[in-house]
Image 1 (tube, rainbow, N blue to C red):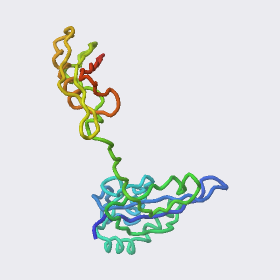
Image 2: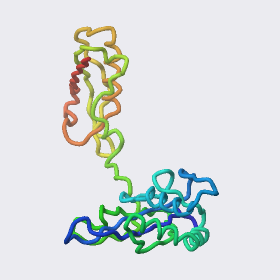
Image 3: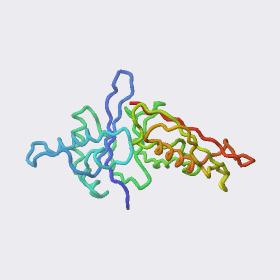
Image 4: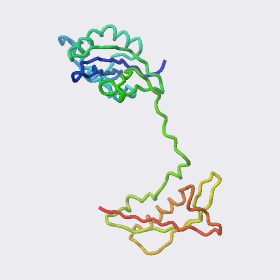
Length: 242
């Protein structure tokens, strides 16, 4: 079965202030390169590794446990994770106790494609004071739907970088015939730049930027096609400062 492997610990801690509810912490371990190593003959080596993994794995934000955002899990399959948890649970238990915490729950989880870990609020409670499910899996949010064609999201000329000299200002006027296309969006055609006065040696670049824009852009609403077929005058100012 495909998915993202994770070992998730829910740890209980005493209240931060008298009268407050107990505090909860989530720690997430995931497969990856080991960031914290100790020589094999180090005294209490497994305890120190477990404590470091708990500390490195504290995770309130949620998301997909991959890479260096999470602590290292020395397992790559669900059975390997479960075996590791059984054989090393006592070290994690001792590590939690050394920080005045108690493991409330520990699970190996295979997060299926399209799912992510939910956010775990600081202390383990949401804004309404309800305890958060440390193991909750949520659907990955869909990308926002873009309304209309790409041309409707182009709103201004893309002035060329090489033409953005310090302390330069001016304007470009373009005259276009407006028509309504079969998709209901209005567009320009037969566009020409109206020459008035020369700004600087980048004038042609400014003119081309406006022509590219008016020939690509589309919109709904005003301005609308002229009943007599008269062209519309577009005016664009530009100012570049240091």
